[in-house]
Amino acid sequence: MTVSGLPKNWYALHTRSRFENVVLDGLARKEIEVFLPRITVRSKRVDRKKMIQVPLFPGYLFVKTSLDPYDHLDIVKTIGVVKMVGNRQGPVPISRESIESLKIMVQGNQEILTGSEFKQGDRVMVIIGPFAGVTGVFVRYRGKGRVLVNIEALGQYAAVDVSEDDIEVIHDDLLITA
Image (cartoon, rainbow, N blue to C red):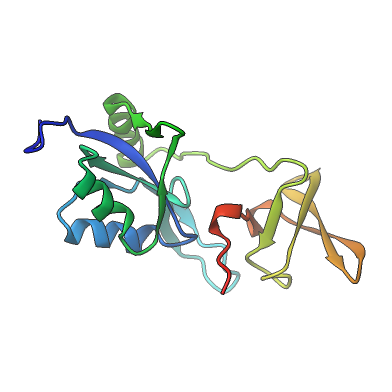
C-alpha cells in the first residue's frame, strides 16, 4: 500500500515514437518505478554491423503506480508520454506475473522474436531507406520480409515494395498539428 492507501499496480504507457528512453529517464528522475524491456538486435544501418539495444515493444513502457491523482498527473505530464493504456473506465493494470515474465525474458541470452502485424489499410510511414519520410497505406505482405505500400500523390496511387522492417504504423493519436 502507498501513503494514499491505494495499491500499486503495473500499467502500460504509450509514448511518442522513439521517446521510450526520454520517458524512462524522466520518470526515473521523478523516482517513479518504471520498466522498459529491451532486446539486443543487429543495427539495420547498412554502414554498421553493430548490436544495439531497442525496446521490445516500440512506443510502450511500464510504470508502477497507485493511480493516486497526483501520481497519475505527474506520470502523464512527463515529456514524451502520450497516455496510459486503458479503456473507458481508465488505465488497465497489467499483472505482476506478466511483468516478471518480461523481465526474465529480456535478461536471458535467447533470441526473442518480435514484430508487428500490419493490417490492410493501416496508415504507415517509411522510416528507413530511400523512401524514408513517405507516408502511405499498407496493402499486403509480399513474402520474404517485403510489403507493398500505396503512396497517394496528385489523386493517384503509386505502390512501392519495401522491407517490413522499414515501416511503422502511424497512430492517429500521435498526429500533432500546429
